[in-house]
Structures are given as structure tokens and as C-alpha cells.
Amino acid sequence: MKISLREKRRRQTALDIQRATLDLAREYGFDQVTTDAIAERAGVSTRTFFNYYTNKEAASVGHPLGLPEEAKRAFEAGNRLLSEDLRNLMAAHLEQIEDMQDIMQDMIRLARDHDRVKRLLDQFLAGLVEELKASLALRMPDAPDDLRRVLADWVLTGLGHAITDWVGSDHMSLQAAFKREWEVQSRVAEILLESRDG
Image 1 (cartoon, one colour):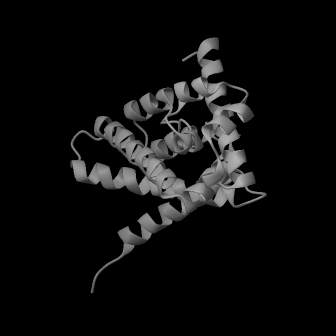
Image 2: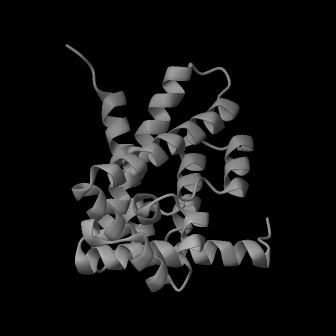
């Protein structure tokens, strides 16, 4: 799907405001940051700031990206191994943020210290779980809903571990962190399947 020039500009402005928020929070502490200061740093009016975000907490989180539509449709219609198609869908999702390591790093740090920012991130992640669960419902229509929910949660928790490893590393690419985490998750699944009680 081609993005219009107007939409590209809107996305860039939203990203500029988010970067300004995170930069100011790092420089002065988040509690000292005002929406006026964010708008000035981003080169927009305060009115424009409020056209994009309701408050500085929302600006610090930005507009997190959901699953890419094309990759999601391919997953839902896929006929390969579920694990292979899931891995491809998650890799496509991560491609959207590969050039945002600084933003992700600052956002994760801020969420550790500020409950309102953490709640917003948690809401986004819950929405992402629901989005993946809906795709799993199309891919696995006969599976129980609670199984799809747990699978979506498990996959996205692993994705979160990969992102955390990536932002904490100076030398690891996001895709390499994801590959390593996926291998660990796959091995855990194998161990569970191999386990025998008694």
C-alpha cells in the first residue's frame, strides 16, 4: 500500500514531536518537560502538538506501529508451518522500527521510571496481542480462543525480549536479536514437547 505525501508528512511530524519529547526528557528529566518546550524543539506550534498528542506522555510513546497489513494478510492466508509464517510476520513488524533504536531506547527507559508512560505502552502491547490474536483466528479458526490468546501473548513477549536486547546493545541488529530470541523460544517449545512426566 502506497502512502500519500500528506500522510508521510503527518508521520514525520508525529515522529519529530516524539523525538523532541524524548530528547528533552533525557536532557532535563521528564517531569520538567512542558508541551510548549516540546513544540518549540520540534519546530511546531503548541496547537499542532495537540493535534497529534493529548499530552507529553502520549508524545513520548508516539504512534506505535501495528502489524504491517501486507504481512498480516500473507500470514492469515499462509499454508506453511505456523511457526515459519509467525516468524515472518514478526520479522516484518520489526522492519518498521529498525531505524528507531534511539527512540525505543529512550521510550523503554522512560517507561521504567514513569507509570503513565508504562501504562500507555502496556495498552499498546495489549492491542498488539489482540491484533495478532485476530489474525490467528483467521489462520486457525478451529483453535480455542484462549489458545490463540496465549500464543499471541507468548510470541509478542518474545518480541519484547528481542527489542530489549537490541536497545541495550551497541553491536546487535534488531533482526539478529529477534533471530536469537526466536531460536530460544523454539527450543523452549521443543523441550516442553519432549518432556515426559514420571
